[in-house]
Length: 419
Ligand code: ATP
Ligand code: MG
Image 1 (cartoon, rainbow, N blue to C red):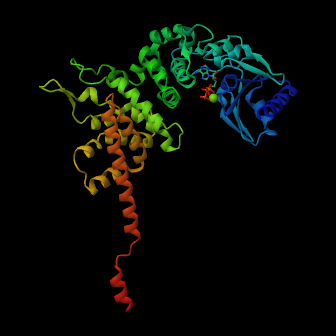
Image 2: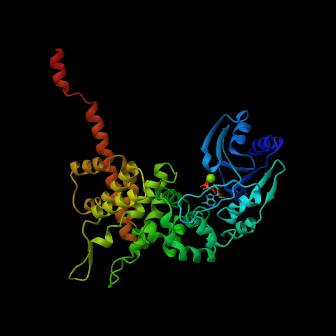
Image 3: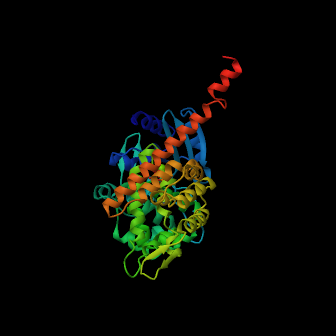
């Protein structure tokens, strides 16, 4: 399906005297047999030349970021981005890379983040360029940098986040030298804008293997800079070891929530996953040791929602996303009152009303949180939640009936109509 599109485009650029190559994600994913929906190309043509060459060919052409040399277009089902060869000069103190154009594909590949992303297919001849051994690294399932990781991360510290993100997306190991550099250089992530860090974090959390990426962030100390609430949970073990390790529990809840995602249609759902990650962040601050040696966390749901809001604001999430996640964190414990006492209908209605749009996600989070090593207890919690959900449905049906039913009863209607 892809062949006609890349051949046409390659021919078009070649006829005009420019080089064009498919590059990065689509090449990597094609070699892995993984679907990739956008086509990224790199070219010797300058952005204005690219625009002219696309004009007669694409259904629509737009400017993705002219200052970075990227033009976008769509042709049929294909979304295409074409970027002029780069030879970047970075100012180590600045947040933004300074762009200067390069004249060859080799130079462009050398400034890419990882060897598996530094492969290209030249067009229209389809010769593969793999100067840094990306194919071998794909076969070994390892993330490595083309040059030394220290140089690469000095040029752009965001790449440290990207290493964890690709580990989570591809299920690969990160090369030990790369992990060491991430550990040594973690604090340099502070110069990167919150938005760019957030985008990588979202991709990591929505990936198939988020545990892998999160473990790397925690192990290298990057999490301490970008999501300190997460490593803080790992300390959460009381001297009697009566309470389960909250960090490990959190990762388990995340994985359970992912298993339940099919309830929302099966697509990775960031809000649901991030709520799972944050649901217990109020625990370190609310921990109290009782006289009998047990531990309680008084109002950790409310405190947790506050901490979550602060973190998500710092990471520049939208208000809608912040409200959604915080609703879930704040309500995730409410259900535990259902099992012990009897909830009245109005308590059930209040649960539904407070959850609002987040009800389906709240079902997921609460069920995911009911994991415990004690299988009998887990089974009991599951059945209790089944019961609550059934009651919510019955109440909803009842309300629908009530809303259909006229205010008058049958006898009154007959009286009025004289029948
Ligand atoms: P996806 O689109 O699924 O997120 P991708 O591999 O296409 O995955 P992008 O973030 O879209 O990743 O980046 C496209 C390509 O640009 C990468 O494959 C990589 O070669 C290069 N790249 C992106 N960001 C950087 C960076 N910060 N440093 C070096 N190279 C980068
Ligand atoms: Mg991409």
